[in-house]
Amino acid sequence: MYSDLLGALPEVFGLANFAAIVIGVIAGIVVGAMPGLSAAMAISVLVPFTFGLEPLVALGLMAGIYNGAMYGGAIPAVLLRIPGTPAAVATTFDGYPMAQKGEGGFALQVAVVSSSIGGIASAFALMLLAPPLSKVTLLFGPSEVFWVAVFGLASIIFLLGGNPIKGLISACFGVFVSVVGSDPIYGNDRYTFGQPELLDGINIVILLVGLYALPPVIDLLETPVKTDGVNSSKLGTEPIWRALPRMSHFWKTWIRSSIIGIWIGILPGAGGSMAAFMSYYEARRSSKTPDTWGNGEPEGVAEAETANNADTASALIPALTLGIPGTAVAAFMLGGLLVHGLQPGPMLFQDNPDVVFGFMWQFLFGAILLVLLGGALATNSFARLLNLPRPLLGSVIIVLMLIGVYSINGRMFDVYLMLGFGEIGWVMDKLRFPLPPVVLGLILGGFAEENLRLALRIGRGDWMILFANTTSLVLVALTVAVVLGPMINRRIQASRSEDATS
Amino acid sequence: MHEQENPCDRTLGYALATDMIGFYPSTAVTIPLAAWLFGYRSPLGLVAATVIVIGVIWLIFDYGMSQDFPAGRLWQE
Image 1 (cartoon, each protein chain N blue to C red):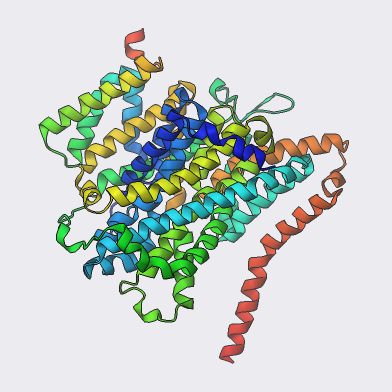
Image 2: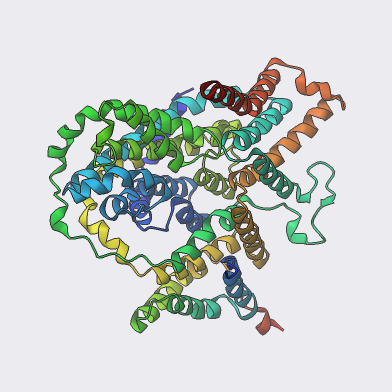
């Protein structure tokens, strides 16, 4: 099972593949350090460039950017209290007070080491969990895959928090988008309105760029960030080998936040910011000295930064084995795989072991390189990135995004479609409809439909085929638990608080 | 209270221009125009950025990957 893992190793050390990781990590740190630029945005800009690249080179770039950006966000978070990415918000709580005390250099070193450890833990989780999971999912028949899709949708609707009805409506919209195109079995047109461009269905990258990547770029154009610059004297950076012993007692923190981050990454739809917040509050709760938290406690920085890197590779565990992405960035990566004709799922592990396992190694090396590159380059030089002209940057990124969407199929129709999704996403955001269920609805809707119909064909139209074996029944039970769990939980808490007041 | 505007509307103008007058002309106008409108005023920076970005796009996509961009419907009649 793990022999393919070692087999893919030499490939990763090829010059182009390794250079891709290095460039990716550096680019990721830069992107993360620019407030307003996120990993999802960078990867969406990257997609068109990857058409001409080998799959592993393209994936190495993405893995590097993902890891780099999660750390990069900490740089302005510590130095200026401006989180570079949403996932770095929790880093500002203790990072900025540390910088004010003249320990900014140490805070950044804690951030880079913790990020790297989180990323390494996550890569190991991916390597250890994905191969056995793919063996299990290989045995899944159509009815099991149908229930996995239903379970994935149910968990994103009911576990994300917020209003489940709105989540359900969002998911239905995503499923509706997945229905557009020609029928997979009979081939008749559905909701194409006579547009030949819609016959193949709607590419996931188009939806992702419209919902996730374009709106923040426009934001970047419109909101100026004024900084007074950072003067180098107050950083107090010392060589990293002298800083490392001061971090040695963080090991408990690192383990705890790695586990939290990995778990959040696996859950569909919840991303780095949720991981960072959860582990930050968890750590403060269990700390012996909760008063120091928020006043420059290095452990707080370690906590948040470990967690937001630990969800990177683990988000790909369900993505690679089942086709259910754990985060928005993982959804973009799935789009990148599809561009190269690599269909995620258990067959990917059999047909393209070099690519899948190489990708996992790239995550690991990306995380290791982070500490080398981030440690050497970071601190003062990166703080200057904030002074790049944002309007210029924003307009260039818009151009690159249009190229990206255009070059998927080489037609303007997709660009208009993307803008249409941007429009819908904007309205949904204003009305507080969650966006992750839309993405998952599009991905899983097609899965669910195809496998449901296949299962019914096998069962000659008898719906009981869906409940015919144990695996299906377990998945049904899990789905019911996910739907009813939060409701029961709320009921119990409500009755408890009633008891307390009476 | 004034109505907030959907940010995607503004990108539509650029997309329409690309469709009508072609990718390179509309990009050459959009990059400096958008940057200028949002507060970047250095003329040298505007020209340099536009030339570099379009040059690199042409080199990578047109020359390197032979990806064709819309030439503009207006000229095709």
